[in-house]
Amino acid sequence: QVQLVESGGGLVQAGGSLRLSCAASGITFSNYVMAWFRQAPGKEREFVTAISRRGGGADYSDNVKGRFTISRDNAKNTVYLQMNSLKAEDTALYYCAASSRIVRSNNPRDYDHWGQGTQVTVSS
Image 1 (cartoon, rainbow, N blue to C red):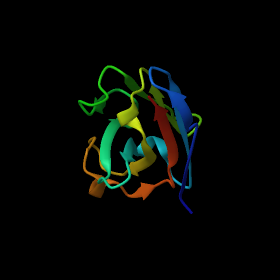
Image 2 (cartoon, rainbow, N blue to C red):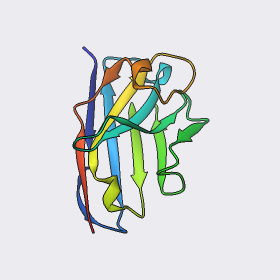
Image 3 (tube, one colour):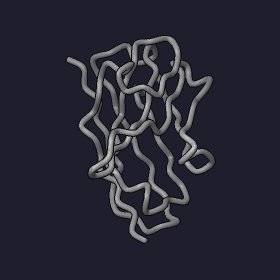
Image 4 (tube, rainbow, N blue to C red):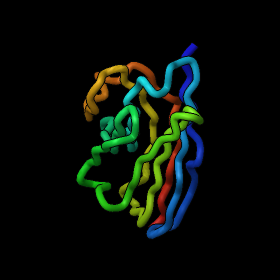
């Protein structure tokens, strides 16, 4: 049974930082592209960032480029999202996702497995 379990969300003031984690089980983690998406109330799910299977490359949305960093530890089956200089508009439910495709994608339809999400709230 595949499980993706996010953690690390919470309430933070604007300008602050948070680090999200996503622990995977039930998959050969190093065979999966990993990504973070987010969804704010009343909005569609939005791509945030994705990282290659070996961690050699990553893509970021323009909204978070330069502020967020994705990384992974294949020995721990975990992907991370370091979020700095947080803004009120970063408030959302953040989802971890895994794709068996070879290339990174910003399309949620390309992802096979999803976590339940962790809430990030940034107060202004």
